[in-house]
Image 1 (cartoon, protein in one colour):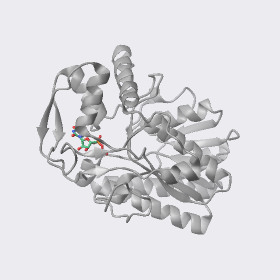
Image 2 (cartoon, helix red, strand yellow):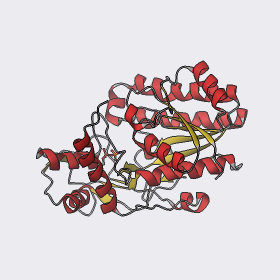
Image 3 (tube, protein in one colour):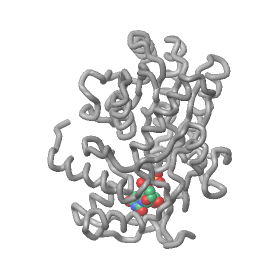
Length: 331
Ligand code: UDP
């Protein structure tokens, strides 16, 4: 793709920072908008960060005009399902109102393309597996619902303002930059792989949320996708849109699922250490199995995962955890 001027919201976060790195490597001119409420300054290369709130429509408009933005990749959002069940208003305000402000600025500034971070959570408890993009949309928590609402906003902004969009419905983003400089560091951490690695390091057991599901070993199945493969899907989506492609929605997963116990096995194989764990009760709202049908992304956007192997994903996450601890980079 020709070099493009791309504005990335949430570029200081986990998936955003990996995408920014790939975009820069591929020669694009990137500006990052992040209020650092969750992201980290150290994730953004020097000179690229604009510390702005998505609520500040005039500032976003001015930035897009000044930058000559051609497309937006929109990551900035709250992501914790459990928290969204306790504080729904915060999720709707940040995720939905923030997106509306961003879209308003895009229209003002004449920016016509957006790639949106959506989620498999839009399917709620899906009717089958693997999950197709045509499955019913029925979120079961405010986090998922906030993403459904933004997908709906996007439909109307296309219809009325000709802003084309690609919604990427992520499965389980995991792993880290192969060079070990970026990785997953949510606070608090709720995701399985970093928690398993932490358990190896601290010796404190991790809780497996239920082993009585109707799956081969009784634990939940998820589709773990390497964060760089996920990042690459965004770049292909931008390419599709700036090349005149129509608005669309894609699952982003590998099409292969793994149980929690398989993940523990992979972590033990990579680290050479036992993962201390206990079996606990089921986590509320956890569907037994979430695996993507990924052929739409493969055939329509030409996506192919480079790091589909579970061991590689865990290896990269482990390298990052080790290098992060060694460097203890100050905030
Ligand atoms: N999980 C677990 N213990 C934990 C965290 C997660 O057993 O401490 C399980 C969880 O039930 C799910 C899988 O690991 O089946 C992945 O969970 P995660 O929170 O990483 O992602 P989610 O699928 O909820 O987006």
